Length: 224
Image 1 (cartoon, rainbow, N blue to C red):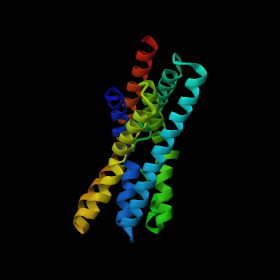
Image 2: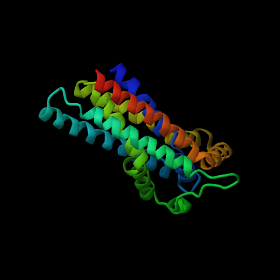
Image 3: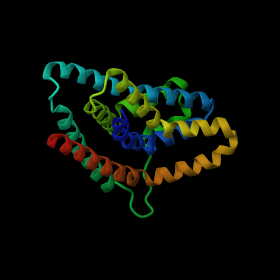
Image 4: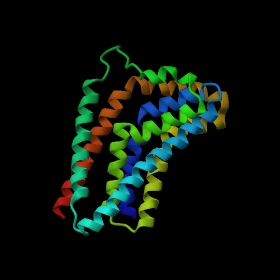
C-alpha cells in the first residue's frame, strides 16, 4: 500500500496545483454567498475525482477477470497517458503568453460572480471529472493503483488519499476564507493574479514531469 501511495502522490500534487480551479474557488469565495459556493465547488470537485477513479478501478476489476493476472494493459495505458501528457506540455508551452501579454481567462470564469451554488458545484465537477488534464492525471493515478495489485479495500483507501491530496489546492482558499475572513482577500487575490499569469508555464512543467514519470513507470512495468 505504501508503494501505491508513493506512485500516486506526484499525480495528486499535480492535480492539486492546477491553477484554473484554484482561481475559480478564489473568485467564488469572494462573491455573494461565497462560502456556500466554494463549499459546493470543493465537494463536487472531490466527487468528480472519486467518480473517475472508481470507474477505472471497476473496469480494471472486470478486465482482470477476463485477462488474468498477467495482463499488461495497465502499462500500455500508462505509456499512452505519459505520451499524452508530454504532448499537452508542449502545447501549453507553445501557447504561453509572451512578454507583457496576459493569458485570457475562460469565458465562464468571467461570469463566475453570477454563479448560483448549483452552478458552482457543476463547475467543480466539470473541472475535475471532465477536464482533459485532470482526467488524464486521475486515470493515471487509478491505473497506478491497479498496478500495485492491492485488495479492493486498500485500493479504495489509496484512491481516497489521492482525492484528498488532489483537493488541497481548491480547499485552501475556502479554509483561508473561513479562518481569516476578509483578511484573506489580499493574500488570495495576489495568489490568483500570479497563477493567472503563470498558468501555462506551471502546467507545461507539471505535465512534462508527470509524462516522464508515467512513461518511466510503463517501461519499468514492461521489463519486470
